[in-house]
Length: 249
Image 1: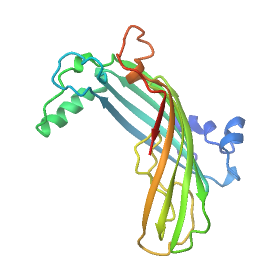
Image 2: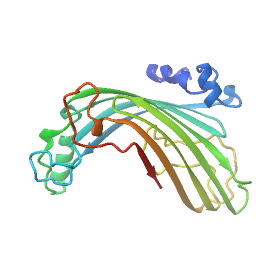
Image 3: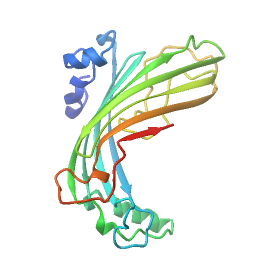
Image 4: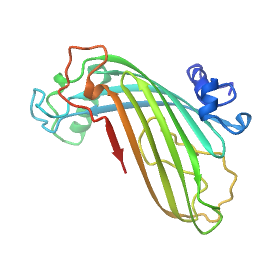
């Protein structure tokens, strides 16, 4: 782990490995902390939110507030054959400096789509900082050496920050023919991880596979700057109401 970036190195106390904080080792630790593997990464994220009425130059009452957010993420991922812990630090900015309007206008002009005209009413500029943790654990439903088999993962995580503060639990299940040795996640989410989830030396029985994938996610939303407004701009009202509980299938 000596070749990782300095910011990722600062995330190591939250990974559950042998040098993690005692509380994290107890809750999220590995059976053998000395036998884990590491990956690290960088991400660039841009989110934009608009109301349904694109033609109004003022914020349409009762509709989604114009909002943009861009962030640079630094992540560290620690895993063994049963568990993947992902920690990410996100440094971002809201408002015009997020360049969300510029990006949207560029895409709309390129595709000859009418532009949204009310971006002057978007969230004000504010620097944000968020720390995210997600743990994924393998769910075993018998041996995967059969032609027809089933497996899955369970996950839980949390995010604490000035852009979003959330917690969630969820999972995915696969059932099918010649299941791949590892998972890939089709969703876009915090700590998005494109590598193999777990270390695995299982030999594939076939060069092809076919399976059904299903899952759920239940989230508790304590703060969302795009709905609640920026933390340090008490005088700014979005006109929106945040849903505290959100479910996905």
